[in-house]
Image (cartoon, rainbow, N blue to C red; front, side):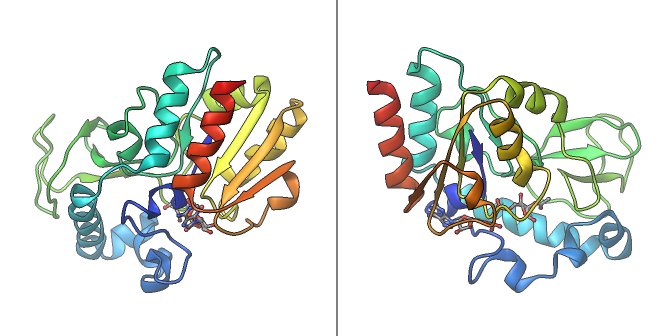
Amino acid sequence: VLTGAGISAESGVPTFRDADGLWERHNPMDIATPEAFRRDPALVYRFYNARRTQLARAQPNAAHEALARLQRDFPGEVFLVTQNVDDLHERGGSTQVCHMHGELLAMSCTACERSMRAGGEFDGSSTCPACGASGKLRPDVVWFGEIPYHMDAIEMRLAECDLFVAIGTSGLVYPAAGFVRHALAAGATTVEINSQLSEVTDLFHHQRTGLATAAVSALVDELLQQ
Ligand code: OAD
C-alpha cells in the first residue's frame, strides 16, 4: 500500500498540489531542497515549524484506521509505504510504516549524522540533543534532489507483491509514481484510490474515485471479507 497526501487531507493536513495545497502557496524550490536550506534556513525552519504545529492539531481519519485494521487482521503481509511525513498512520494504529520521505517529527544532525525523534520548534541556533552541536539540525525529511529512504526494502516488497494499492497520491513525484510499474511487472493487481484520476491512472487495473475515508474503509472491508 502506497499512500500520499490525499489520505491525510480529511484530517486537515493540506496536500501539495490541490487548490490551496502547500505548493500553491510556496515554491517547493524555496523550501524543499538542500540549496533552499543553505540559502534561507530561517524560511525552511519556519515552514516546518508551522507544519508541526498543524500536525499536532490533526487527528487520524477513518482511512488511516482502516489500513491499520488491514495490517492487523489480514491473513497475509501488508506492507505500508507512505510519502507523507506526518505521523497519522502511526496514530491511526499502524505498527509498520515505511516513511520514504522522512518524518516531520524527526530531525537529523549534519554534524553527527544521527537522526532523532524531535517535536517542537527549531531554528538556526537549536542544538543537537545527541552531540550538542549548535546550528546543525535539519528536518529529517527528503528534499527534491535527495534519495528517498528505504528504497531497497520497498523494491523488495514490490517485486513480490500481488496487490498494489495507491491512495491519495498525484503520481507526479518519482520514484513513488513509478512503483505501480514495478508492481505490474511482478504480476500484481493494481488499484488506485483518489478523489480524481492521477497522472499514472492508466497503469491501474481498477480506479476507485472518491474520498479516502470512504473508499479505503470500503476496500479494507472487502479484503477482510474475502
Ligand atoms: P499531491 O498533493 O501531489 O497529491 C495529492 C493527491 O491526493 C491528489 O491526486 C488529490 O487528487 C488526492 N486527494 C486529495 N484529497 C483527497 C481525499 N480526501 N481522498 C482521496 N484523495 C485525495 O501529494 P503527493 O502525491 O503525496 O514530497 O505528493 C508527493 C510528494 O510531493 C510529497 O511527498 C512531497 C511533495 O513534494 C516531498 O516533499 C519530497
